[in-house]
Length: 431
Image (cartoon, rainbow, N blue to C red; front, side):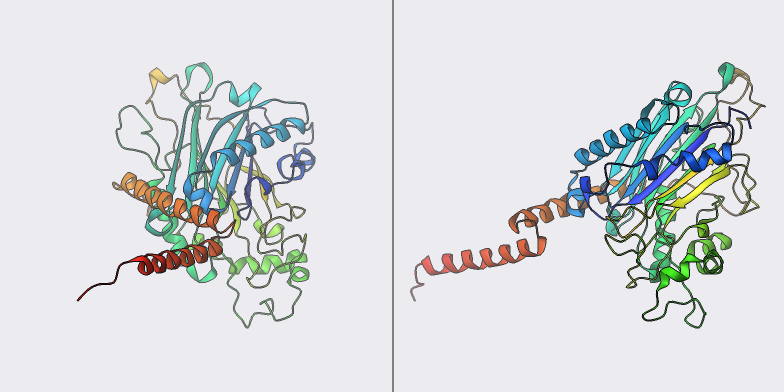
């Protein structure tokens, strides 16, 4: 193993709309899994070079739509940075590379000071909504940056995307449509000076896609492992052999095999850990069986040396991929993935001797993603609806002392009383 191979840690958590209360103060189990990683690295405990942390349902929806997410994301940034550094195995220091939030979807990316943070450049952020009329209750945010190579080489680009797709098992087609919309509208600047066309998430040397993707288990009712009334499904999922059977009914895996979503990306063995959704609040290991337990929270990835023809093979080494059961404030469990990237390409020449374009991902010949020419129009139509609906909802919550439903009732009663008072004081109409 060579030290030029970057270690990337990716964490994702749907915090169930709880704002600043959605995280415990001690994040060591989630953001510092160095003990498990050190078993793989064997020689010494090593801090990651890049840490990406994604959130979905970051805060109550009316606040997110209203644009009141700045205080929450700043609170998260301070807590995460302090926890990463406090638990770094060799007291490494980190810096924030970028943060971005749209409604309830947020992404923060950090770099280790002595490796990545001191050289990173060309940092860009972007967002898009895929809810009704492109609102931000569902959608994605993205961060892209470049790490230059040695001796003036252009280096490689890194793209991180955090997404929250449409919920419910029967809404598979909507999830697939969400992803295609994200590919077309989550756009970055052109990848080279010669191009004026915005670039998609795929025009990158490395791509990491994380979040609550909401793909469900769709197990036939006649299958021996199908969910039964009064069944303790947690005990079923305790056995890895059962989980390995259930993975073949995972909607995301099935659609990836068909080539309909997340084309060209790879994933670790997600069935090695128990389904991350849907848990009873306050419980470590008790599922709420109103929904079929599923692996809704995922991390996928690709690097420019990967072959697009092999779904299960990547030159990125998946060191760790697991969930953290001890967090109980949400119906989701947070997940974490640690990835060891391949060494930077040794064939790079100085920038003046080659095209000013970093190496790009290779995609299946049948897939050619392209920017949506109406992407900006759709994004700002969605954001306009976000603000109007969010602020109206926020005012109703204030009127209802914290409850939108009570606020609506108070508003209707108040409007009725005002109308009655106006009609009582109006002079009679003479004939």
